[in-house]
Image (tube, rainbow, N blue to C red; front, top):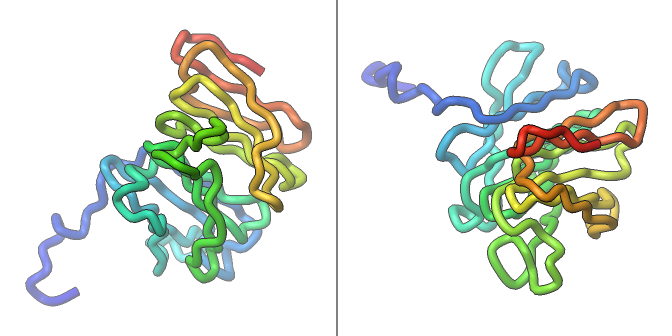
Length: 185
């Protein structure tokens, strides 16, 4: 940042989603944010109260679409990023390295078998045991992914677009707030 840098050029777009884990807060960035209109996810250090050094970007680049949902694992090691095209990317938070892609196949997010979401990911949550990742999409489905094999294990149809997901940390329950103003568990 030089002497002629204008403060307005340093501002980030409004935050559309965020997720954090306290476990590694003294070691590396432990909070991740999605920003309106951006395919990149910013990392933050809550211990330093500052923007982190890493920016998480899908290897698919702009083709992955806008980052719409994030989920930092309770252990603080990984961050999942959901996009407007239905793609989910897994990143290591310490190094920023891309580790996996879920729901990617022959098309934009959803593959020919229908494994990925058809449209934007609206919510990501991980269970307390860190074995399963749930993703909720604009396509009205909640999909359950095995975090170790990255395979789809179940799909639930909500009959309405998902607007938000929430998980109970000590159980296997996931609540989905839907666009029809109903909550499904």
